[in-house]
Image (cartoon, rainbow, N blue to C red; front, side, top):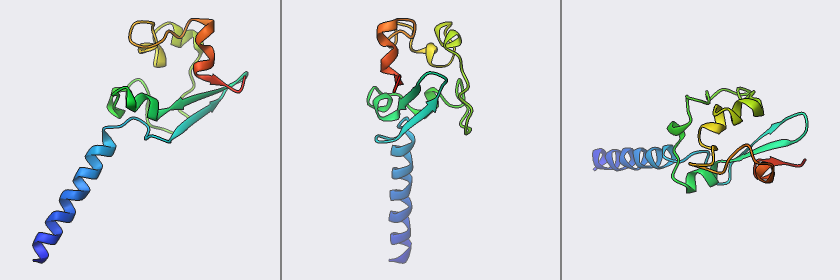
Length: 107
């Protein structure tokens, strides 16, 4: 009976890790970066709802390291970092003024 209980508990833990690992930043988790003129907000839940997984962005182009995200808009518009997807084909473009407020909050 004890081996059965341990097996069930182990299977439940594996299932939890698999489900949580399949999501981008978990729903409800929001990351913010202060820039010189605004705060950039990344909502992992929005990306997870679109079907993205952590491995889609980590470790490339984003290392999972505190304070790593030091990017410039010119790099994003050139197709690096967020611009890999935010190119107007896969996701909304990063080079249109009308879309700035989608990421840049508190301007």
